[in-house]
Image (cartoon, rainbow, N blue to C red; front, side, top):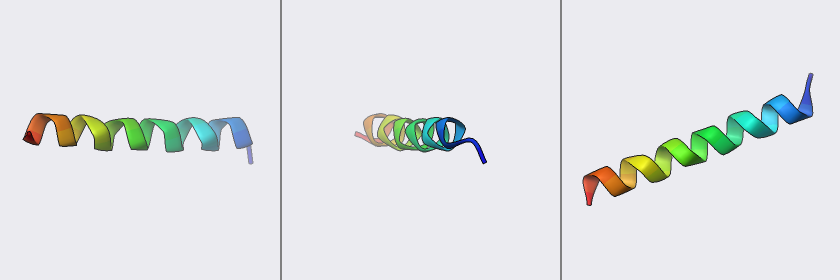
Length: 25
């Protein structure tokens, strides 16, 4: 596995969650 890719996936996932939060506010 590529740790960098995994880390990037997690980062994008969190970013998506934060975007969801902002759009619901």
